[in-house]
Length: 323
Image 1: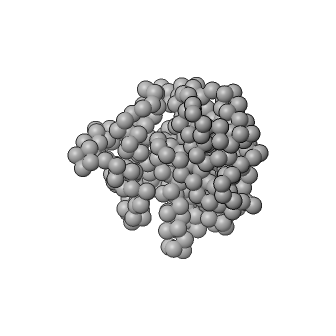
Image 2: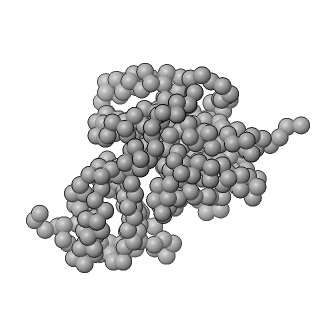
Image 3: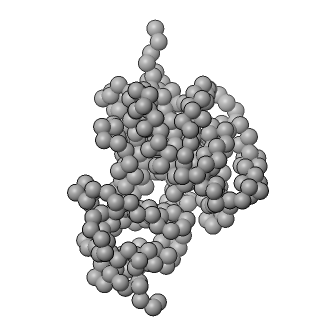
């Protein structure tokens, strides 16, 4: 007798690489195929921002204030079990925090209590080609990026429109030296034909020697990567230009920023995303979310950031002035 198992797709990739955009597209595809899909999201901070992209009616669980690879590995297994007990599912998409090591997520999904309930179909790693090209990050973060590439079944190379053809060719050769077996998909805005992902549905995990786990990989958030989150609840609207200028002055290494923000010059609430470049703002229903900002980075001065944000709310055009 065949036992019904839910397909698991693990989405990895460093902060701001485009995982959430891809997840949105995949959930739409599952709906069109008549399949029942759930989402499990992991965030480093105490609040979730990315969950706003999950369509209404989609079963959703969030693991907050910790990284799967450090503090909540067992919790992931338990939450997967709850999802399967409460819903009849065809697929579960796990969007891991950008600081997670893929093998740790795989470990959690292969807990004995899940053995007859799920099957891991693919680890899909998002690579921000511009972040890879310039490498403006610590050595430990670079090591994590390579680990995320190494353990992928599918590598989505995002933002390739920003590279010259010879640069993309060189980058792909570089990545193939790390993982020669993964399927490489160059794209922009995470526009991937779903068939390119699902055609590898026969991936088998078993005892593949190439996937043996070295416990000394040292990719644990906070302790080694020095990635910390700072979240701040806004009580007043901000000036968009001043806020954008301020972000560019934040000392330390800011890998990711996101949140819900109200602006003085226009009504409504906006979803804010920032990674390796200019901020992106998208209008959202104001009544659905609370204004809040979340920052993820290395060596960030949280006290100064809080003082600056208080100043920005009290004097919105503060960072429009001559600095």
